[in-house]
Each structure stands twice: as C-alpha cells, then as structure tokens.
Length: 477
Image (cartoon, rainbow, N blue to C red; front, side, top):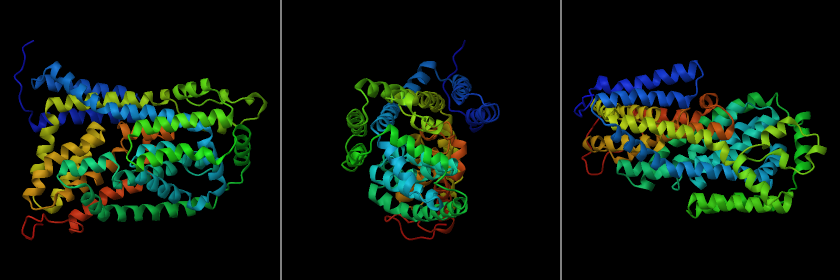
C-alpha cells in the first residue's frame, strides 16, 4: 500500500475521531450496554484509520501510546496500592470500626452535607481525591447503604467533596500542574481559586443540606437491619483505638509530603499487623486479602454466626484484583488518547477553538470548552490540564490577562469534570471504589458542576478576573 505523506488534518477531518468516539460510546456503551473498554478500543481503531490516512505510521502511533501508558504507570501503581490498603484496613478492623461508630453518631438529616465536608477536609489535607474516595468515602457509602439513605447522592457528595480538596490542596498533583501549564505560581493559583471554589462549595452545601432534611424524616438508624449489622461487626471484630494508626500514617505522610505509594504500603503493613494481633487473622490471610480482597471466609468461627448478607457484601472489598478492571480501562483510554494525539487531530481542534476568542467571556468559554473536550476525549486529568494550558497561555498573555485566570479555569473545568466521565481513570476509580456507577453519582456531584458554572460567571461578569500586572489597565471585555 502506498504510504501517504504526513500532513496536518483539516478541521473536518480532525473532528471525525471525536464524533466517532462519542457515537460509539453513547450508542455502544450507553444504549446497548457493551463494555466501555471494547468501545474505547473500537474508537481507537477508527482514529488509527484516520491517522494512517493523514500519513502517520504504525510505529509513530505505538510510540505515542507507549508514552501515554508510561505516564499512567504511577497512577496504575497507586491503584494497586489502594486495593491493598482497602483490604488491609478491612482485615485490621479499621474500616469496620469507622462503620460501627459512624452508624451510631450519624444524623441522617445532615448526612449528605457531612459526607461532602468530611471528604473535602481529608482530601485538602492529603492532596488526593482518590485516597479520600477509597477510604472514608467507602465508609460513608457503606453507612448510607446500611441506614437506608440514597447511595447515589452519598457517592456524589463524596466525589464532590474529594475533588474540592484535590482542587485546593497544595499537595495535589493537578493543583501543582495547572499553574505550571499556565505560567502561574502555586499559591497565587490557590488563592485565585477562592473566587470560584467558595461559591461552588456553598451552593453544594445548601443543596446537600436540603436533600438531607427531606430524606432524613423517613430514615431511622434503629432499624432491625442496622442493629443486625452492629451485632455482626461486634462478633467479627475487636475494637481498639490503635486501629486508627493506619489512617494516621496516611494523613501524616501526606502532610509531610512523603511519597504516596510507600506511605500507603506502610499503612497497609501496619494494618496487617493489627489484623493479626487484634483480630486473630494470619499472615496468609493478609497476603491473600491484599491480592483477592478481604473475604468473610477468612473470619474464624464464621460458620457459627448468623451473618447478614449486607455485612458480607459491604466488607468483601479491596485487593489488587479489584483494581484490574480500572487499570484495563486506563490502558484502553490511553491507547485512544495516544493515537488521536499522534494523528494531530487534537491539536487542530484546540487551535480552532482558540480562534473564536474575541473578548473576555469567549476567552473563558473557549478554555472551558477546550478543557471539557480534552477531558471527554482522553479521560486524563493530566492531559486535560496540560494541553489546553499550553495552547491558551499565549492567548491570555496577549489579551492582557494574568496567567492565574487560566490556571484556575483549567481546574474549574478540568479537575472537577474528569471524575464525572465514566471512561476516565478518575470516573472508573470512583465508581469501582464506591460501588456506584459514574452515571448514577454524577448528577449529585453538585460542586463539580458549580465550579465550571462559576468559571463562566466570572468570564461573563469580570468577577475574579485579573489583568496582567505587566499590562496597562485597559478595558478588555
């Protein structure tokens, strides 16, 4: 077959892979229920056909895909560590103890707003939304399921609160990446985000409070099922204040800016020791749980207990195997991202969007559209920030706007949106860890929507938009 000369795609050619992906995912996954991984592979095949047509070689595409997957390896390793830490915290009794006491102190009327605030505080301290979702988020969803509260709303509050912290914490990778891509500085970027983040958080808190007040009137934590769950937990585990040590290790390690994976593995090892010492499990139980997840079959004397099915399903979690589906999704998503990047189509789409910038609002709107497009196309929070950031940095500078306006908008419409996309790594992880489909919790992640909305409000009104210090204070609208 005659090889085409490499050329830049036209805009019409460039949008074909995205249109194909949207159609394949919306019809294949959304309507027909086909596996999203297979749909992403099919999208990658269509995109590869366009790349060949534009003159790209198979070697170039494989090289780009390999680069994308290589960059995803730290995320994949964190996923495996999260699987281990969840299973070890189950084995030690750490998560069950949090469930036990959490059920006793929970006020159903304020549960949703409490879930949002707790996750926001923890993720701000640790700098990781994934860690917050995979630990306290799991506990909150379990409690909601146990007392009869709406699990999708709870999961939405957990995700929203976790991404509040991911967005505002100086320890977060995306919070450090956004000012880097835009040309701003870290703490300047964080301070500037208060203009959009605080109103978005207040709006979310109001809605979660109203939803809780409405639902709480029909919920009771004294139900027979809840009492049975409490009795089961008392039979299976022995409570001790030392069971909080694994949590303290993760929090302390994050505050001290220690490497994430070693800290998580240390926490898991300590949890394993606590499980052996306090709960009577064996070293073999710990290793088996780290791979396959915690199992009720590992509990001594379980055959003599009347264990509720709710307890069995709630505690049987974690293990590296539980993360394999998420890892597979990441590999498929990054394969598509690599090929569409290699084809040059993504660059053309973003360039076209930048051409429509005429005033302040269109500048912010174009940034939001570009960032959301990147999020939907790649499912990668890093690419979602990096590529639009590099593209629009000169545009903001040319129009006389401070770089921190760009870095903030990247987070408002990138960091907060990726977790709402089912085929993204963030969406797949949250769904897998919480046991709630992305499409089910996404409508209730109000903070994420409000953050993007506030970015557009600032663009339209000029609220929180600052001019570059190097530019004269001229009226650019």
